[in-house]
Image (cartoon, rainbow, N blue to C red; front, side, top):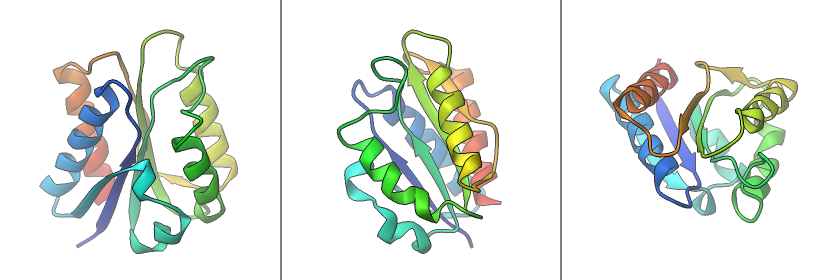
Length: 141
């Protein structure tokens, strides 16, 4: 059984809904899943999991949330090489530039993507939540 972490930051609850759906998808495939907020995770926990889903909404000028999520993620970057990950998040404006930049950053760090990223505009609809469950299932395999 694989161990999957779903680590997220959410200001409005949209990315939190996505995180719960990612966790559900991984559980449905038999993974042992831990869903936690960014404040509960750090580089010291990276080796405890076979795969990690990271979720963060677009903030400000299409960047990761800077007070909690970005510092945690920066710390984890040193352990991304060869790690199976997936990215997800919500946005309310823009065109997904934050996700493109985040994916490029992870690829440069040597991360192995389990699935394409999932982005939802504002509150995730059922199609978006299904994509999140699929992302979680891909993390569990």
